[in-house]
Length: 196
Image (cartoon, rainbow, N blue to C red; front, side, top):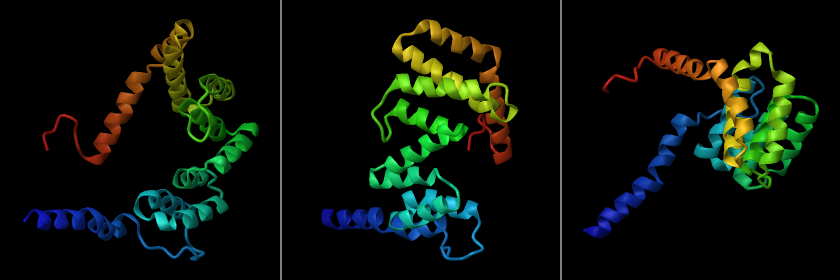
């Protein structure tokens, strides 16, 4: 009896997710010239979980279409993020906020590079210096201050942490985050207080 239960569990754990993958990973012809950049990018991201055998194909296509962050997904899949880091550095050197933040996060987390909080601080501050006051970057600027607050606190630099905290308090960041969350919940048609 126990062997039957083990066999059933193995079947459901191994084979059932494969049958559901199609609903999360729609079949598209990668050679279809009418595929949008967004579709290719989503296929790249989803393939990490739902179709790893197709990941490099979709992500290389996304990269060719201008989505350089696809190289991060390839790096996660192959455990070699050197192309992603090189591309992020190239973008950062050209002042691209996405490149600067990607590199900063890589050094903060140690993803694909040796963790170096001091390099991440330099990059986060570079991003702030170049993007402070730009309306389109407002939320990312504030999130960057929050990240710097956490890094400075971790490093024990409480004076610099306090500077970041003051910015967060003056910008009403917590209230803004809560308002965005409430709006997203409202748009999803649910409530935090509901008992579903």
